Structures are given as C-alpha cells and as structure tokens.
Amino acid sequence: MYVALKPGIAGRATDIEDKVTRAIETEIGKIARPKNVWIVPDMPKTRSGKIMRRVIASISNFADVGDVTTLANPEIVDDIRHHVQSEKLARGETPRQLTAGGVAEIKAFGQAR
Image (cartoon, rainbow, N blue to C red; front, side, top):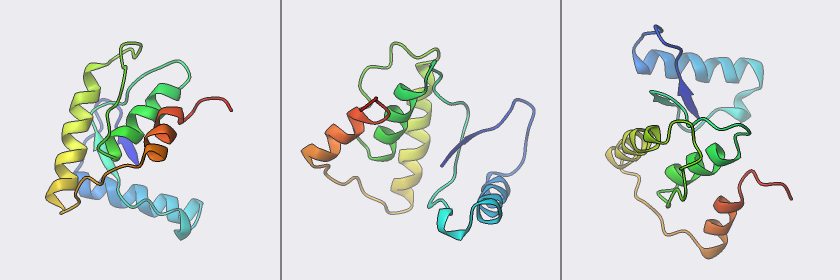
C-alpha cells in the first residue's frame, strides 16, 4: 500500500504504517492487511488513475514503468521507485523475473476490458 501524507502532517513512518494497518484491519478485516505500507512524498497524478496504477504496480514488481510523460508530476516516479525498491532490497526481497504474462498484466492494469 502506498500512502502520501498531506502537507504539514508529520510523524514517524513506523507509527503511521502501524496506524494505517490497524485502520484497515478494523474497517475491512485482517484479510485485507497490507504486506507493506510505503510512506511516499507524493503519488503520480493523472485524471483517471489508470497510468498511476500501472506505474505503482511496475515499481512494486521491479518492472519498467513505461511512459510517464502524461503524469502531472512525472518526477515523483523516480523518488517512489528509489524509496520502495531500496527498502525492499534492504529487507532481503530480490527482484523476481516476471513472466511475459505478468509484464502484459502490469501494462494492462487499470485499462478497460
């Protein structure tokens, strides 16, 4: 799960991650508990969110994010990628090789079917 805080909101990342996880467990149930909560400086901004979902899925899976020129803030993509992927590597998670189907699924993520 990716979380961008409103400007002026401060706190330790671990405290915020715990609060988000507890809120999800309370409101939805423990089955919906996120594996990771990533506190990021901002989220990619688009009109519909389709491109943003593809970019976030690509970052999480160490895949190519593709074209981000239509984002309102394309510079944030590199910030998020660096933060999330370096944290994953520090935790011992290694990039896995995606299948052709997995790459296609990420590229199609959020598109109308």
